[in-house]
Image (cartoon, rainbow, N blue to C red; front, side, top):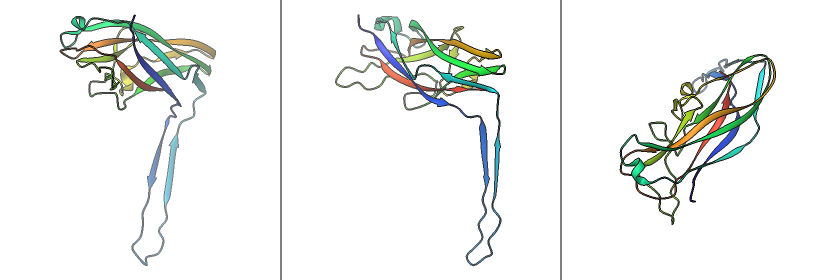
Length: 184
C-alpha cells in the first residue's frame, strides 16, 4: 500500500521573552550619546522537552475522488508528540511554525518530488486531539496542555488529514512542518 508522509521537525524550546533595543547615534564629530539596552524576560518554574526530535506520520492512500471538491477531507491519522515536563504547575503547547510549505490558510502544501508526480488540489491539514483545526503559524489555534506539579510524561495528541483544495490530481504527498514547545 502506498502511503504519504509528512515530517515534523523539532527545533528546541521556544524561549518566552522580548528583547527591546534603543540605539541612538550622533552626527559626525558629535559627542557620544548614551546607549540604553533594555531586556525583558520571564522565568517560569516549568521546564519541558520533546522526547523525539522527528516524527514521520504515514497517511493512508486515498482516491482523488474523495478530494474532488474544495473542503473535502480524508485519511485522518492520529499522531502524538511525546513530551516530558517537570516543575511547578503550568501549561504547554506545541507551536507549529509557518514555513516554506505553509500557505495563507495555515495548511501544508506538498513538496515537489520530481520525477515522481506532485499532486495538485490537495494539502495536509493539522488538527488538535479534540478535532479542532490548527492553523499552522497561529499558536492560538493549538490547544494547551495543563501540567501538574512534579514530573509529567505525556503524549500530546494531534491528527493530520488530506484537505481538498479543488480538482485533486494523483501523486505522492510529502511535506513537513517545524514545531517547538511554547509555554504560554
